[in-house]
Image 1 (cartoon, rainbow, N blue to C red):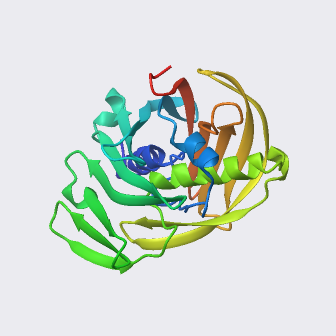
Image 2 (cartoon, helix red, strand yellow):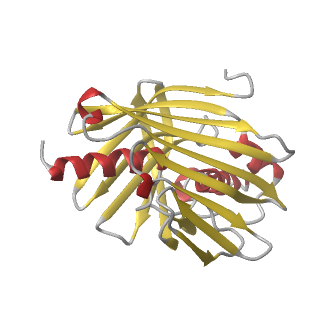
Length: 267
């Protein structure tokens, strides 16, 4: 096993745990401003989703995402965990992420985000959002700290999934057909600052995965040829991603849903 392979595996699993999209540091999004209660309810309904991760048919491990209500009204906890298989685990430990966010005036607002890679203090960090000061504060386990400016609508790597799904639900509820939703721009606060990019949408057709067969909307990152991101969102499962394709410099990884449970009781 080469160092190149090791770096590719780390990139794949780290990207997939925050993608969906499961959208890693190389993939950025932001909030649908002023989403209605209905769209936000769709995006914040608790769920438990489990995925397998493969590259060129080779299994790399599994990922799991869980959304649950928080301790305060209109606040939520979103967790992601990547578990490499035995082969990959020789080069990379478990990766976990957690976003604590609230819905404020119809906008998804992250409060705290934590990313942890087992045995990697320089890659394990926390983001704390101070909305009154318009700042995001970064601190990693190696002791490094920094701050940068944020504006309303900026998301963390997990809350952005909720904001993006709320945007899709908003477009759908206004009568726009999935194939005609169009494009939008989102912003993400992560360990290296705030980045914005464009998403495009198109009909995704019927996609079969371990969790079943779903009619989908295809959402893709546009304008960055080095980093690719494509999500297939299930039109009849609250726009949950059932398949994700992510890549860097031509190396592509696929995540497919094995199990989806939707609702407060996990069913």
